[in-house]
Length: 281
Ligand SMILES: CCCCCCCCCCC/C=C/C(=O)SCCNC(=O)CCNC(=O)[C@H](O)C(C)(C)COP(=O)(O)OP(=O)(O)OC[C@H]1O[C@@H](n2cnc3c(N)ncnc32)[C@H](O)[C@@H]1OP(=O)(O)O
Image (cartoon, rainbow, N blue to C red; front, top):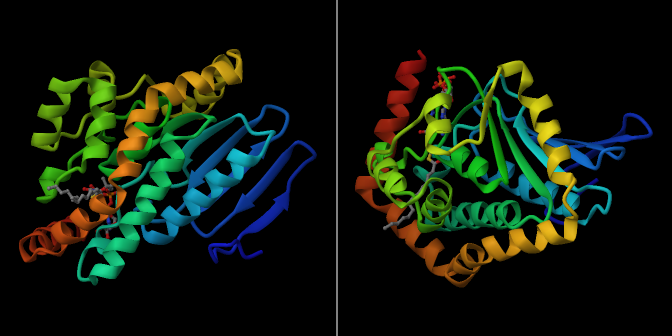
């Protein structure tokens, strides 16, 4: 079927209790018996967040949000060793202002839906999660990371010569505190799972093969609280950050477009991409 956004969706029934829907870059398996949906990003090689993935992400969340049977979402990756490499740098390089604006609006839309969700959201971080990948995780209610010291998580934007916008910074501050955020963002720090746990960036570190089962167990604990009370509390806690972006949405897009269009920023991003490619070859 074609959704209102022009994204093709495949629907399938895999049992009486499980429903599946899949787009190009997102697959969702909904378990009607538990009320839990597992949403997987699947954009090889590194789940970088391009316009299409962000659009599919927002649509999938919207569908789950209106599904009365769905009370919680586990967000994870179908790609081994990578949760998400963050924003697709090629979406921010060598394109025109209209494209940058459209891309940023899609990112804002996805974030407003994820951070503002009424459902319980748990990030099952089964791999590296820099920058925009960290934003996804920090926007959830709870974070479980795989115990592998090769994986890192954090807002490393300054390392690329760019700056995390205010709404990334706000939720990082709410998660790890002002001082730790200041240091972390200025230096563009990436943390191992153990260090991320120490500063409260993730809530639990578990063996790689236990990430999903732990997420299900945590979900059951959160489900023990009456939905209406939990939802009102979540909304009370998150409303100021949501309102701030909604109020300044157009200005935020304008800022992004003018910042990213600068020659010096384009040059920094190109150098970073070349460095990534060299490292891979
Ligand atoms: C005044 C204030 C105004 C503020 C206005 C706003 C300013 C802008 C704000 C923008 C916010 C940006 C947020 C972001 O998310 S930027 C992206 C940051 N991401 C990263 O730094 C991660 C980079 N990637 C890696 O570190 C590694 O790839 C990773 C650890 C994720 C995986 O390593 P692995 O060794 O497994 O894989 P490779 O490095 O070999 O990568 C495989 C291929 O994928 C390409 N790649 C990787 N990451 C990205 C990416 N983010 N976007 C696009 N492409 C990516 C990589 O080049 C390899 O490609 P090839 O196979 O072709 O070589």
